[in-house]
Length: 169
Length: 420
Image (cartoon, rainbow over the protein chains, first blue to last red):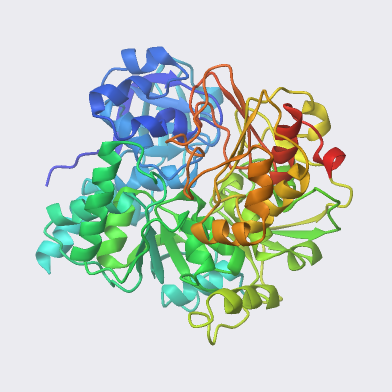
């Protein structure tokens, strides 16, 4: 089966600060709208983001990225925009679990906010935890996924695993 | 060596007697709660050809986020949720009895020592009665509905030993807001909390629910209070059948904690979380005078009978300020009934409050009291993120029910002790 989310992704960086919450990634009154309507309000605190983010771009953020709600639309919206993944100092834990469940690579990497600026060319690998800033020649080490988390990512998310488990049964 | 509440519950639920903080386990759910999200999850199961849940007895579905339905689309969603609940043979479809966490707790659907997954981040609320509640998203819920289990990190625990007494018009909400300001909103990131000490032991279940609820605002996976005599009396009075045989539950005395914070709250001033983060907390004296257009007393955080009683005490014989509107959304239909019996609703209505149907209402910004750009709302809820309750150009201040009621009277943020 083709992996929807590879371990390693590389792209151009959009940079955000601390405590960016799920509600600005997916405002409640937009989450039932069709994608074309709701995409306009993704991370609306920076209106140019939803307009200009290109497929394969990455996000680098400060502490507590995705704090708040359990709404899966927060990471789903980023994935639907084509964002390749997120590296942050730390994550809101439900957001982070949702990312694993939908096979959207997110890596916690202390020091990333200092080591990366907007527009940098960044690469990261959730299997090893390695982070490379090609623009600045900096390497950092993040929190590598556990084998179970990697297995979910490799198989394209929990729904794919569920399908396999129940078709085998 | 002894074990924390999280270690006890997860080692039992994972059938891994030696499980300790830092271990990954696959744990079996004792209860699973889904609100309107159930529709999405159940349809997903259908698409995968799965036509049953792991245990129809353990799954609870309740419609609270969009009740009463604000749009035809949501009304259709409710129709589908009812129909799917029947088709999947669920034993506990709770309809629109109020906000999920309030209803499950007051009816004894969740009990001390249980592991509960809910499609809502404030599932930490169940920690108020000694249960391990935590929020999950749609995909994980779909997985759990089918399999009954989920991978989890056994979390390290941060213990807050709370001492001292709270003054008049100072509430458990002020304590948890103060903790968020003092220790930050990541003090328990990826961790469990245990609230302990004489102050915790002396709190009502309602007050404990407020703090456990906002445990997630401190980053927590679980936010426990010990299940003690207060808990058992609460459960036996409200759900005698369900709670028969339930025993006290807490950590071992020699449990190992990642951190223990001893806190004395004596003399604590009412606390307010300023825009746009629950950790941006200041004493009320520093923000007093801020004009308020809407005061909202609602949500799973602070809309229980005790909260409405406090508001009624402040509003009795007074009027809501003409420049302000006060919305009261009782946490459950049962809370509304109790408040009506006690005359609390009458007091609130006479003061000019608007009392709405029970549900999540304005808190997440779905319906029932959204705010416009330039408006300020003081709210008894849990989050004041930018745009949370409506316009991204509005501001939300979080406070206790006492602070909300006092601001409604004054038309601006004031120290509720002045109106007590």
